[in-house]
Image 1: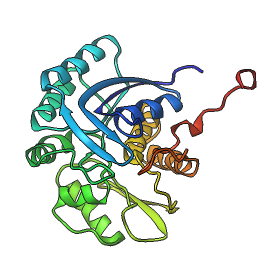
Image 2: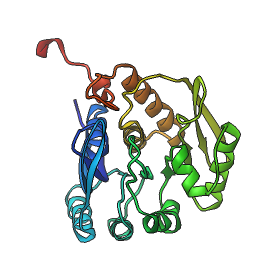
Image 3: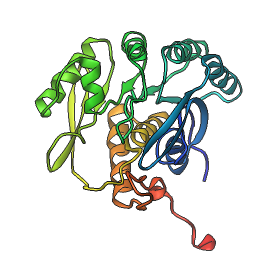
Image 4: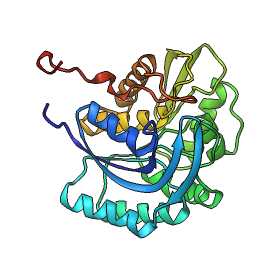
Length: 270
């Protein structure tokens, strides 16, 4: 398979492999692109929860971004967990230095098991200085509530939150609707010109660890290959849904999804 594009992934590490930089790499690779990384934090976790988080020094995060991009220029960048305000400021500075284009931000704030992954000062910096500098943000409902200081209970609240984020300077937003209590999942894509709702049947499973990381990485990959943002969101949602349907059922808690669902092995290698 010929490599379609080059993606730089800026995110935290998940030792269990279901989310974070590990999920990002698997997603980008399975969709045919080349993954590079800048690790922002190291977590010790498994499917039952997060045991500990160690933040990587902000200077080292910048070195990873700048030294990697100096050699292999990324076609797009996906940003995930940014654990501290120093790391966020370093990422902003480095992205400007490498003249980054096509940036997707997944504002990771809470792990599936409930562990907070970002502190309040970092959230303020993220909201004030970063969300307006990227092409798309992909918050879930709890993250959208934090970013807009509002309560989201239904699809109308989701749309209102999306519009509020656009007023804050966000260019495009995809609010993931999986946390709403309904039979269908409605993911809402919003910018100044349009509102698009992607409606899919909810897949009831405990094995959904890493869906947000996977979705944003899939969007980044499709976007890097020339698809529009809206089309990239549509295709990435389909990829994640298929990954959920074929989940491998690993671990005792919130297990990972199947990132390899898009890979077809030639008969000669079976």
